[in-house]
Image (cartoon, rainbow, N blue to C red; front, side, top):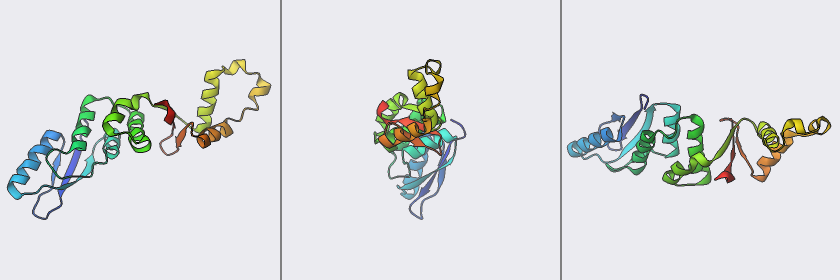
Amino acid sequence: MNDLTIGAVPYSYEGSMFRFESIEEFKTKWQDLYDEKGTEEYSLEFLDGSKIEQKIYQTLEIDSVGSVDPINLELFFEILEEDKIKTESQAFAFWFCVSYIGYAPSVAFEKFTDLFMFEGTPEEYAQDYIYSCVPESEIPSMIRDYIDFKKMGQDMIAEGSIVHFQKEGFCVDPYSL
């Protein structure tokens, strides 16, 4: 974990805001403030950490807790401890499985590595796909010049073979799971 900090802001005026970096620290501070002031519910905010940690946090939709045993917050720290999500593309694949396909986070965490993702445009994906089936050198140049990879990529999106996320720069095959 890289300078990970999450803030807990109480819903009541009597409570106190606190920061934490682990589930153990959260539970200790939560319990202390509950014993002292009776504060149970907090709004949680991701304050600092890597882009990967932030994407995992957003995927789990952690925004508030009402007990000392918040399920998604515990899962968040378990995922970080397993160190299975090491790249931004893996964090994006995890997000895709939860947010786009609709898997429960714990199921998505087991399946996200099976998701086929391509970093690039739909046109590049189509070209890569065709050339993985038939090597470019085996396609006569007079035919190769007429292959419209841009249109093919658009068709793949239209038929649902791939989903393109322009901002993130990925093409994802939702049927690869």
